[in-house]
Length: 388
Image (cartoon, rainbow, N blue to C red):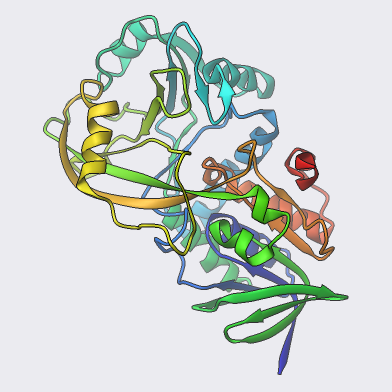
């Protein structure tokens, strides 16, 4: 027996939960499907915290999405009573001279400042001397560093955000099916989804499957999307004095390339550890074969290369570690567009390592696009066609 639906959302992580919520908010008939039980640890949307910054150095196309995300998270907080966004401030810092790169963009600090000015986002530009004076968590500064500080940035709680959006979507009438795998998607007038629980025919499908997108959809996504394993580390602190109420989340570029940097968060309330991570783009994997265990040697190498001598009180002792996935395009931007061959399939992937901060706004923008809403964000910069 074939089931009928107006909309189906495939994958209910950062993007999918947001799309599902906003479609349900618009009163449409929608089913959300996930092979696991979100929020879960199998994809890209876990690990307690995700940095959010409104002036996005990756480019001005992103700013409307993250600004809308902040608004939506505050609305969800009011609706659910959950704390989703902590605006503790975010510091983006790089060397005062010489080349730098972050997410493939040169001079990321200057780019962040430019976007902040363009969109009227409150910010400060400071040097390393001022950073050391105001934020004692940072050690070993030369004093010549250039930094962008955004008081309205900070971090969000990814698992809470996903849960809040799924809960509200269900309350608004969305049907959520977990533990169901979508095996194939084809189109002949309507979209046909073969799943481990049967067949669904839909007027529109939205694929937000992260690292599973390319295996599910095939060309051209199988040549455009790669998956990289990333590791998160929580290092124990032997002194919390430098991490008072004013301690920000941060991105610290201390060298010339995309891997000469690390990012982190102030300790959560009641915790005596600090979450730190970097990124790697050399070793590819898949969502089904990735090693989800973290070798203690990985945490030790991370500490020696990035953390030691740079963060006050941080020891080499690890309280926990986790692996997650980045699904990345060649230019490290997003794809938010219709499938080039399937007219009724809309694709939202890949996040390319900087997606969560935009996810709520993307969910709204996609729902607006699919239902003919009036408040439409320009998504042309995220087209599949740019790779042709």
